[in-house]
Length: 294
Length: 233
Figure 1 (cartoon, rainbow over the protein chains, first blue to last red):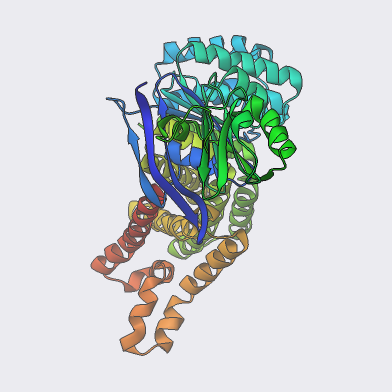
Figure 2 (cartoon, each protein chain N blue to C red):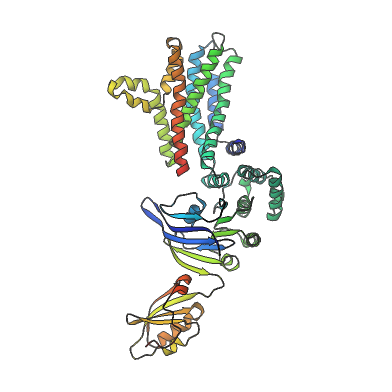
């Protein structure tokens, strides 16, 4: 897949506090990437760097389109402005330099699509959070962006509003708009994202591709008289190897409970269980299909 | 080129009603100041120019606060030109202060509150001094706004200190040795413009032009640095 944007070794520090550290990944054309991670893991900072709103302390961002990449941004907390929806959207359209005729048609189209036609002349400071979030997305898609950047698009919305917005994002997915979004909701990951990137303390911890199997790595030790043969026979184990007197087992997530139980039943001790990065897994040269190691 | 941005910024600011305190302060002061007549033309312009300086600083501060930081980011992305955004912001503030200047200059002329008829030269000098000091008020404020990295308490304190110091520029300069007098050049040249209007007849043509232009040059330097720094932020 051709990349629309590529981040290379991006780091960001605020007052000597490291927020992002050596982040490298790319977003493909028509791809939807979900960025997950705990609060304070650097997700929003990363999105704002992608938008060009803040500069990274180090690293480079490559826009791979022949033209200038048009990026639209849906921030997490849209302000309660005292403008009406109509005034606001027309202003944002004019500022972008959209043609008046196109803009009027587009604003009407979006009002209908998002169900805000009735309140188009009401000031937004009287809007609910769900209505504000709709305006937030509308401003970002007034003209079709190459990349849509969404910061917690479903955050704080009730179930109905979440479903409405999910439907709208799926419609945008059909229009082949590339997206990167931070989210906590599994519904976005399951139904929308092609790929998930996990950030922990400013570092990329895990890439996983939706529809692909996810894996975990189990580090364990067995008594010397116990064979690993049975463990190797568990389904979903493509790799079992001996490392410094202990074992490293890579197993499909859905078979991990079975593997852990078997290790414990063999009087083994578990040292660690960690999700395995998909790309690392694929390029690993040490893949040995399950079997007796020793 | 800036029309749509200016309409948006001014509409957003006006809907915030943050303009009401500085506007009413200005209008009430003008009303009280011209309650008695007759008044000297240049002396009155000196007072209202200083008022424009203070009130424009106030308007500038409230204008900078009127757009939320999140919306500022959205606007910047739509505009795709940070310099245009910040220049637009400054033009919008100047437009607001021009309205005040027009009021402060036409009110006494129309109401015949001066001690003599007002000539073209008076209007020209008055307009430039009001506008120059308004630019100065804006220039010192942008450096203390929250967007530029200061906390509100530091920003307001900083603006007030610079305003007070700039009025005392003449006294400060007289206390300093000639070798250190250049230190006062850092301060906005408010005092010198005020002094020019108070003692207009004692200045030569060249001095008048120099003193009227100085606030614009000072402001232009500060505002250019501001736009450049904000672009890189």
